[in-house]
Length: 154
Image (cartoon, rainbow, N blue to C red; front, side):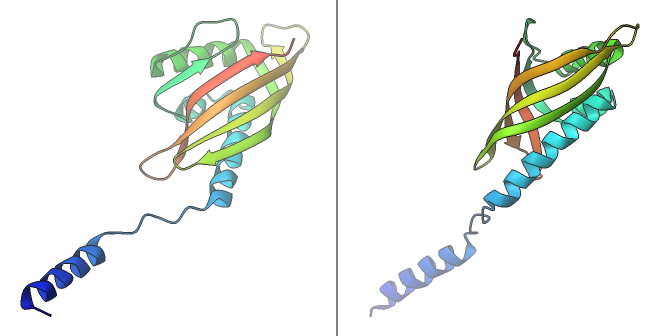
């Protein structure tokens, strides 16, 4: 081999050694993380924790509640949560029907059941909602809600 060819092979080998391999995907771990986030979402709803609930969303997230305009700002999320949690005490359960992870994006199709009791008094109202939630993996590896779309079954 000529010295130039040897140099070329050495440079190519060095370039390959420097390039980092992409992180190994672990779909089972990602799905488990999404399911844990779903459980946390229900717990924060039941605790009426506005700050915790809003923290589940990434910057730029969109919340599309039934019968209301889309919420597209962090302040809007805070207002929606404060209004809902201030008006009702919830006892809900979120059950995922489907969780799909595709790289740094995932979605869950779920149903939400339980009750919402008016804080001003009155009978509990049944909750029967379906939702589609799109999750996005953040730079630190954590999953956050990018889109939350809900619709009543009633």
